[in-house]
Length: 84
Image 1 (tube, rainbow, N blue to C red):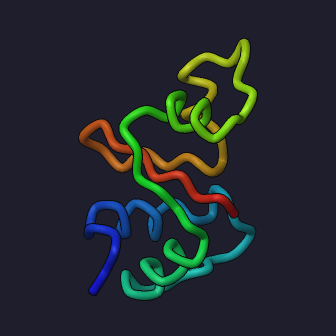
Image 2 (cartoon, one colour):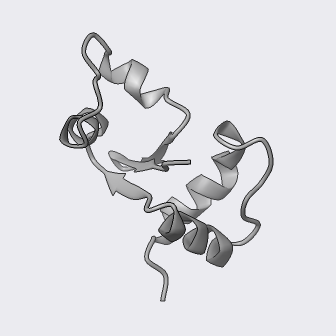
């Protein structure tokens, strides 16, 4: 059974070249496996996630955080964060 829903997987498949120089997954099942291996997370607040993880974001705006290569906007106020 997949850990990530279809919207998250499609978002990653469509945008993976933002983070990686070549595709790491071709199918939703491959994407799910890759994201599980990377311990990717889906969050509603990127800044809260980074703060909780101890990442220094002082001076960074929410827009700047959303532009980070490892952040993917899934839609519906959700973000996929992939530690690549």
